[in-house]
Image 1 (cartoon, helix red, strand yellow):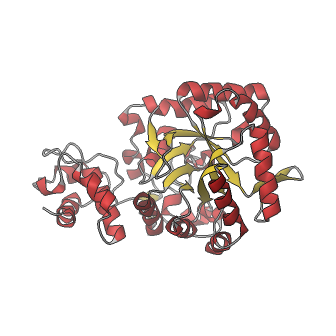
Image 2 (cartoon, helix red, strand yellow):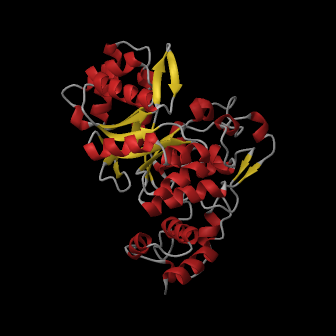
Image 3 (cartoon, one colour):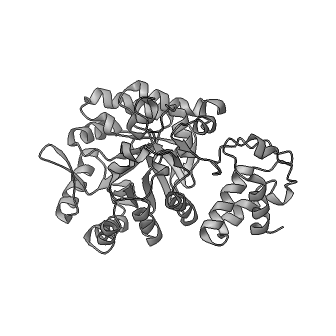
Length: 382
């Protein structure tokens, strides 16, 4: 298992994390078996969105004796009421729900306290200036949560939260279909069939900007919906018109700026094994570029996917990394110091480009690589 820094939090998380919806309605023995396999496979990050109390109790038992080995991403504002999930902003319910969660997990703290499901700018503004954020800050000060997170599907609301400086971790929906859809407050529109009737071309600029701002601000991203609820793995259900593999979906998410871990759901042990096997998969198995280039309803023409198909460069330039650093700088209208430092550590930089064109010949997305290298040399200095 590979581990990544979760932004500025100081936490190291496994590239493959685990969501818990698949644990619902499973007996303790099955939940324990999942946790055993996760520990064996190196998975150390668990998202606790599912508010089902029985599931949390089973997980708490399964974590006994090894709690310190796991990073728990627990959600504020999600409660279980009248036998079903409910999102709330009422402080009393938020407190009762969180305290019950800690009790069932048999722990006195969680590493990430995730403000749940903020998909409108209005909702974010009310949280920012209201009781929920004050409560989250109190929990952080007391050490009950290590850092504050927020989950969202809307890049506009998410970016507001990231730029506030109060949110350390963003849980965001990342996959090659969602990333082409415009920002909006209705998550159902991301998967609505009518929104895929006309071919979609290139990443929504607000989503691209969000990932880049997260990288610049040191806000780590944990990914949800990497498989689109499983639809992306089915030729019949995928809005892209063609099935992708689990490896391709995981690799796509993990190559986005600021992404640290993918919360890969698992309803069966076989699902878990597939996600764990990503770490041993070949580059050819993980490669999504060829598959994306042939999707009948989606086009990424002209957009760098950081896939690495442009390599090898005869001068040894890591073209994908140079392009990523260039995009980060263009988005910030200047070169952030952290980006400049990372660029400076590259063994070979854009100034060494001889414009041979071999990279452009190999690019599945017709990216103007030579032009990007010229811009990078100008931006970062010769």
